[in-house]
Length: 259
Image (cartoon, rainbow, N blue to C red; front, side, top):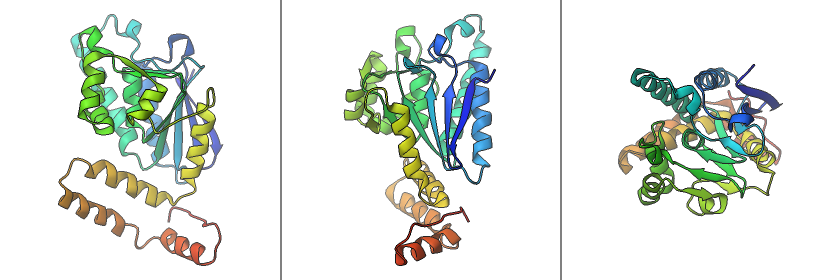
């Protein structure tokens, strides 16, 4: 049985659902391996532009690592696990496709880290988000200490990580941890609508814009501005750029192909 089901909602948008509602969609080794494989396949799909990731059921997006699976692990096993998580989540972060996390329930520990690797997060008002690792005498190890600070700022990241507290959807929105709140019970639908809106745009432009933001964030402003221009230059010779200009002039919807 697949750990992550895939549903093509259109040629340009896919819905990936973590299968494991009975265990709060917790992260297992097989699941993370499958997720990494799906990202690689998505990267090579010329038609696909946006992926929505959610969890099965209505209780959890992903409640973190499966502690039952980890119970017998050695220190070496844990080190391998952290490297697996790092590669899988980094793959999402640098993918040319846009990833939207539909937080239909709890996003805790590794689940929050998965959501942080995505480009945008849509949360149900009742969703609870948190990084409770310090309560287990460990720290977030799949990007939580780094991506969280980049998303909400260092002060709020310290608050969440050092207390291990959980925040509800409205507070997560207020601090910028999620991009928007959905209507209750409508998280997946609204995330898919957002994905379709994003998919209307030029795919090469989406990829270059995403990469410019991700790569430029930690640079000083002069280097970051140079990087932005480099990514812009990569679009100058594309057919989509000419199509965008033609569509604007002709007052019609553009037909982007990724060329």
